[in-house]
Length: 417
Ligand SMILES: Nc1ncnc2c1ncn2[C@@H]1O[C@H](COP(=O)(O)OP(=O)(O)O)[C@@H](O)[C@H]1O
Ligand SMILES: O=C(O)[C@@H](O)C(=O)COP(=O)(O)O
Image 1 (cartoon, rainbow, N blue to C red):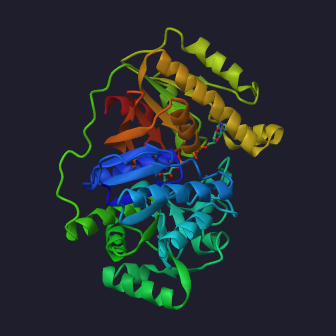
Image 2: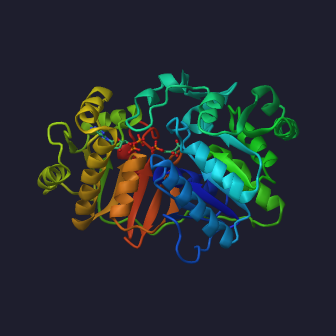
Image 3: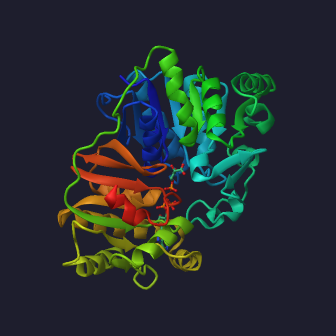
């Protein structure tokens, strides 16, 4: 019976969170979509939704359905996981989903903390930094679906909710758990529904996690989840565990499918080009999912290997993405490329690929759904936030890489991990 129930707004985000929980001693299973039957046996269950860019109503309805399933399965705390770069539009979906969960849980107050220092995401005076850049100067201002053009999270979240949003500043967070709890009370008494919480280091995240022990709802990135398992251990609900991340042995040929257009993914493709076969699809020249998939099928013939991956990417720099969006519309452009990459992934698996890396959150959602995956067992991490997983019932190893995550050599090192 899970003690922690998690709802993630995309699939890479879900594996990121699951990896964090496993690394901190909770057995964790990621299920795809709202669970229909009994929940799997694990300390934590992460429900992966593809709700980050869904219409607001749909995102809220799916998140509430996931919440019901997790509560019915015994979860004592609900974690709403969104992106460490707070990916959302001014309409939502972070605010509306959090509001709905809060009402369902009669919570009244929750933190919003996407900080993830291991991947360079820190929050100071309510402003989100990616490395040494403000969010809106980090490349995220050009995201194909959720361009982030304001780094002030108090302001960003305020645009998505009718609840008041306050700030627990660095000066309090740095003093530790007791000072953080005092700030929570101060904000709650002042009628705030949410607190953006500054966090720069892992020790801040641990202290914030402890201060949230009694919160019915916690919202944030995977970083903040590192403090939660200890709460359950202190309550006697979670035994000490070893080897929470074991997977079956990997088999089959190797491939990468990339739909992320982030700076990190473009750099990873650039590095892979010097070492392994790389096909770069041009969705602008061929705006047809079936035709793109046919090009990939033709290209890959005779190239699959158990020694090194092939890389198939639709990823493109901002000007090319903008050109396709101008031609088709933002959503239709995304759907077209996702459709092409999902077909390509299914073709690759049919051709014997047993180790598949997918780059991009929306892209991963499309691929995982196409492969009929219902659950992912979480294995060891390749880079912070990106574990190998074992996909069931498909029976293949998959790594779902957030567009922004991973070192430059990620597509090479993943397969030697
Ligand atoms: N060349 C392209 N032109 C337009 N959109 C693209 C292109 N390549 C990929 N996309 C779309 O961009 C979106 C990237 O989102 P996602 O997969 O979530 O990546 P990230 O993890 O970087 O956010 C997807 O919807 C994908 O289909
Ligand atoms: O928190 C994060 O940054 C990731 O876990 C995440 O949500 C990934 O989203 P994408 O960048 O869309 O892959």
